Structures are given as structure tokens and as C-alpha cells.
Amino acid sequence: MSETIRNVVILGSGCSGHTAALYTARANLSPLVLEGHEPGGQLSLTTLVENFPGFPDGIQGPELIENMKKQAARFGAEYKTGHVVSADLSRRPFTINLGKETIQTKSLIIASGASARWLGLPNEQALIGHGVSSCATCDGFFFSGKPITVIGGGDTAMEEATFLTRFASKVTLIHRRDEFRASKIMLERAEKNPKIEFLMNTVVDDVHDASQKEVTALKLRHVKTGLVWDFPTNAMFLGIGHDPNAKMFQGQLDMDHDGYLVTHKFVHTRVPGVFASGDVMDRRYRQAITAAGTGCMAALEVEKFLEAEGHH
Image (cartoon, one colour):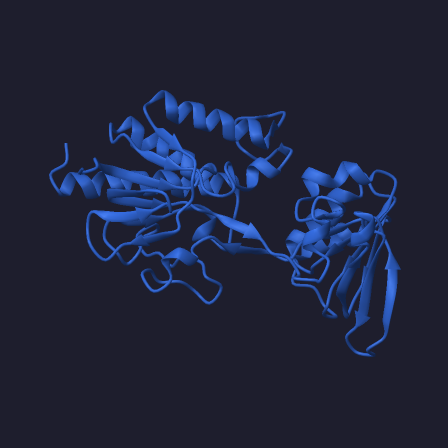
């Protein structure tokens, strides 16, 4: 039984994937969007988005994503749950394997985003959702009036720490080095905040207490003196960056040392007909608006690519 060969398949349902879906749908390409293992992407983990143009009072992240999806669906984009197990980009049509089924497509837009990094501590995974979090905006209000910690030294960590002072009695920012990678403006904002304290040259060895299903303390170690101590806290927020969701393309597409897809001419990968957009290829800006912008670019490139091949 021969399956229909799709014109375009879009991997991911964040800002980038939905924008690509909207543009390809309006070009009558009947896109199929595979929603991935984090449907809605990072915005679905965010509460208020205040920096997306056109929403002067801000908009809830999940609502913005839902609006984008409705808009794309209205023009004929098709959505399907499932994420890619493997893909064969060596010949066209490309084959996308979802485990239970395979899909063939003439072109592909990879908008699979990036996922938060964890520390890999013995008790960390057991406490995710019980005081261990990678999303300050999702979970901050659960810790109103309580002391909490943020791990990291870049802009993400400063942003999370500053945001969390709205809720927490005190925020301790723990960083393994003696200086920060964060931009001057973000660092200054954090340093000026009376609720934020800094613990430098310090790493987390474990988080307590999995048996109580809540965070009670962090086991800390000073990297220079080797001193180990328990630091009482009610939550640990991770601000240590993200890993791009592109492992299934290893060996088939070019990646940088952190696994971000390398593109040329904005959104082209080295395989003709395969394009990448959003946080899976953008390690620099990582904003909703830039993800949407590159999603639009990828869609327009797909249109040109298929047109050159005689698709009407």
C-alpha cells in the first residue's frame, strides 16, 4: 500500500513550527505538523509573554501558541501527535520514522526546538515537579514567601532569579565559577535586587529530600576548598541552558559542538529540501519572535524549492 507523499512535514509545534505551518498552508502545500515530545515548545511552559509584538498587555504563552495553531489549522495545516524516532535524509522523498508509522515527504522543516538541561544529580529527576524546576515562570508562585535557589551564571539564570524575587523570600544564585557569563545589564539588575544573594565557586552535588517528595536542602560543595555542606532551601531552579532536539539527525546534518543544527543562507541545511528554524538552529537569540521569523523564512524557502521542482 503506497502512502501519500507529503509536500512538506514540519517537526515541532512551537512558535517556529506553527509559523512555518501557517505560511506553507497558505501556499496550498497542505503541511503536516508533528507536534513532538513537548507540544507547544518552551512557550507552553511560560506564563506571561510581554515581548511578542502586537500584545501591548502581554499574552499567556500557552494562549499565544494555541492562537498560532488555530490560525495555521484554519488554512489547512494538519497536526499529528508523535515525535521522530529516526529519519532518512539520504534520498528523496525523505522518510520520517515515528516508531509506529513512517511518513514520506518531499521537503522537511526541522523546528524541533531545544529542551532544558538538568544537572544529572542522583535525586534530581525524582524531585522534578516537587521543587526542582527548569521554568521559573511556570513554578515560581508555588514558592511564595519561601527561600529558593537558582543554578547558573548566564542571562537565563539572572532572568530566572530576578523573576523569582516576585515570589520568594530570598533567592540564592549558585554558580560554579567566580565570574558570570551574563550580560552586564542582566547582572546589574540581579546585583541591585536586595532579595538576591550569590554563592560563587560552588556546585550542587545532590538535592534533598526525595523520600519526602519535596526539596528541603541542597548538598553543596565549594570547588576551591572542597568544603561540603547542606544548604536549606525549598526549591531549585535550573538556569543552565538548553540542548537542541536534533540528535535524530546526527551524521546526516551539520551540527555545532553543542548539537545545534548549522544552517547557511539563513535556514538551509546541507541537504537540499531540508530546512531548520527556531531554537534547534538558533543558539544566539532564542526568542519567540525570532523563532517565528525563521519559521516564516523556512516556509518561503520550501515554497521556492518545490516550485523549482515543478510543484504547483
